[in-house]
Image (cartoon, rainbow, N blue to C red; front, side, top):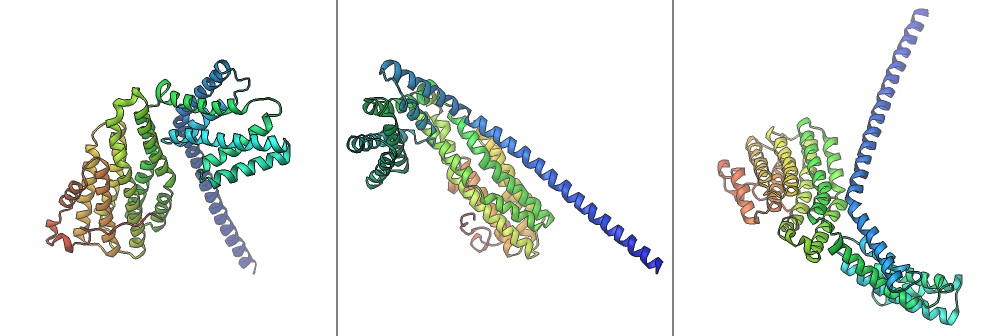
Length: 417
């Protein structure tokens, strides 16, 4: 009995020791993940600061100039709205500053009209302020105004009600302030301190392209190791691409606006064409890559064969995306990116020849489609890109017409998500 008791004690000791080791490993893993997230967060924050630095300097300069001009030249004792409208114009989405300036002025006009009229009839106070804001919003919505105009009308009504009791005759100067502030903001962005449009686009493109390349790499590794969870995680991360794509689209529109308004940036117009034409194919590459990864998950779940060239093909796609970003940023012809895309297609052809299942054939098809998207993003016409893809894949080598080859005519990829 004593011997049995000692054995049970030892077993419990080993068990508790094993549990302690497991808990220690989990804690260490959690701490490592927290450190990794902390570094990533710090890196992201620094990247955001670098990206927004030029805009912050522009906003500061525009606000200072707007205040100075309104106060000194227009003799406005409280030029509140001139710097506000200048900053509001610059804070608008890139590529929308002309429209934003018009919206600011219209919003101010509505706010001044409603505020002035109601103050004349009902005076000032808390319930009068509530009435002015409500009336300004409803009138703006009735007129079919945008959200920006509605918000500006309400904000101007607040200024009218709260500042009018202490300062007289501010209504007309405030309207002039709106025009002045918006105009100075456009002057700063176009003439005094125009941002480099290519630099703006490069910074905006980096998160989107890095996301795509990173998840393609993760998918390639998952296919090699038959790790279904890793492939699923890559799919989840790629689905969260709306913010990156929206930032890229806005940056492209802002760069077009800058190159149109700023004489100092007119020589950049031809270089911006590459990015402007690449936006849609990059979006399609994101969607097709999502389909690729989703079918890779199914392929692993169904234990379908995954020939060695298959993950190599996916990895080459990831490298092609990185090369595309690097060559665009350097202002170079993206020749290396094109070559790597075609190499991905060639490896996909080898994998298809070795034999794949149903989901594997879809993965191969999406490699082809994504490679074609990247070729178009690099500046090649769609028909020529398709021809190069067929040639690199080696449809003739398969010994069957392209029409019968399921990877030769890939299905249209649904949106990721």
